[in-house]
Length: 94
Image 1 (cartoon, rainbow, N blue to C red):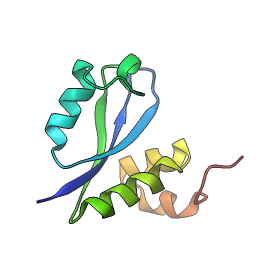
Image 2 (cartoon, rainbow, N blue to C red):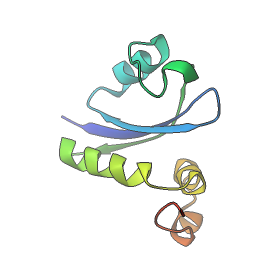
Image 3 (cartoon, helix red, strand yellow):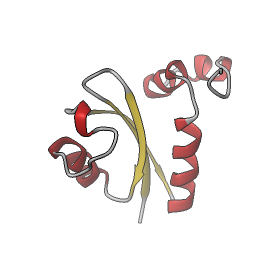
Image 4 (tube, helix red, strand yellow):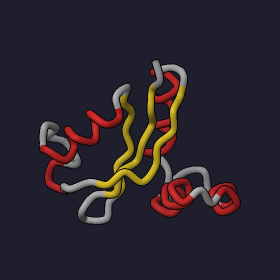
């Protein structure tokens, strides 16, 4: 079974990162309002990045790492701009 880390672009242009074992179902749940969390008032959402990982723990760790990144770093990841991704700071600045 594969596990996924993903990012969605919300209707207000914010970026949400999450992890799931069924990505299609998770995206449907974000868009139909089954989750009352961050994306509920920011629908619809659009998938901008996904990566398959072998274990749930690795997906959770990747999600936590991405959530700490700046918007610029998240967008570089979604665009596959590895050069920019490496140049940007590891964490958000205070």
